[in-house]
Image (cartoon, rainbow, N blue to C red; front, side):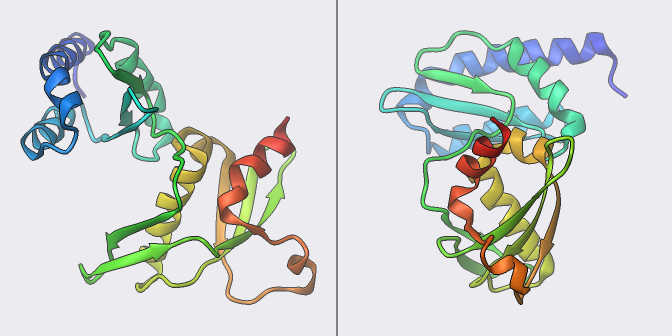
Length: 202
């Protein structure tokens, strides 16, 4: 395990580097050379993920992600707590919820390009006493095996809920292909899950 002193030095080095390229990245967030460099520099901090996206018309976010591992969330929070002030950038310790249509392209288990559209995905939510949840989910249109389906659901829920809420609130997910009578009236479109959970938890 990396010593704390060495790790802190790597965190400082990372942010010094990010600050040095932040203006160039802000001007063009699709620059392949800079994105490749981010991959390299984040990998030096550990087995983490990252994401860039718009906050509003004049700002972007850079998220260092625990990659859906709740045990790493405290670490990513520690990393982001050391972030510098950079023009046009906000820093997050997990991937935030997106304002999106829930559609994207990805690879399936055969390394084939597939298109995923969650517009008509539905779920039934079950609440536990500790205010966490389980869900039965009804999906369609995903060309792949169960692992591909799981990855697609992970991407969808990270986008709709934000990574931290997904990790901390959703305890169990079961795929269903047929509905029981008691489930029919409880079905909700997946795109509404953030409002649904917020209304229950408030």
